[in-house]
Length: 335
Image 1: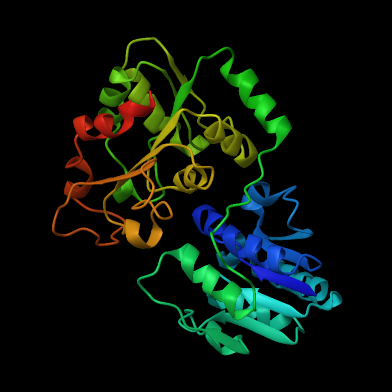
Image 2: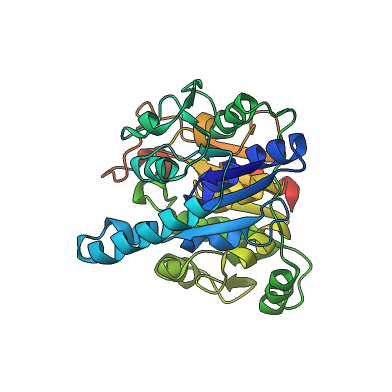
């Protein structure tokens, strides 16, 4: 049986879909599973032994009107590629117009997706799976696995840690007796705990602190390091890819992060985690089953307007209301 999974983004959403992958491969060990992934996220799934082939798309550039000719050419090539493989089942775990169209291009006998998929993508499916809107994203993906006939018991996160990436991380860090990963940024400005709060927290941590992020997070990292005396802190913003990030998180004593993809990597690897939530709902998109796992801590300010899902806010009471004392108390047992 040949299965095509469509889940291009984002980083956290791709991690949430990994239990679906494990359930399907455990239930149908002779199956072939290919995965459509955004080019900038390819490394998080690369070399995963449960995936036979990754099909990459440059989804972000598809939104640019000036690249319309290139986009049409890429869509044609993608259509030709996926039609060449006789997939038995295509599963759209993204649930957007773009992913629905990819499913439509695939001449599979069965196209499966969520009943509440957005942007009209549900009309491209043969089978629509009803899920509880209040459920966590992981549980929604597992419902789709069950709809395929898979046995979805205890969820597992088959997240591959690359040996070469681990070696590169060790070279970047040098000798260390243990470290805490600090992830101070987030895609939405409203999700970010203030840089000064992170600096105050780091002052209290007796272990080495490693700031992680993309090249675009260097300004935030600089604000934190400027507020601290020279010492046991390493800024790796822009110096690690997704493979190195996974290895870095996997080797940490603990992780302190806003609501980011790094948070989901830590939860998948069962690394002690303190996650700071403001405008988003941890019940739906937080570390999976954090309510049942005392290694996964979610801290919220408890303001009445949260969760609002606003990307910007003039007050940010939901984030500034989280005290450094509360975060350190949640963290200190892992130090």
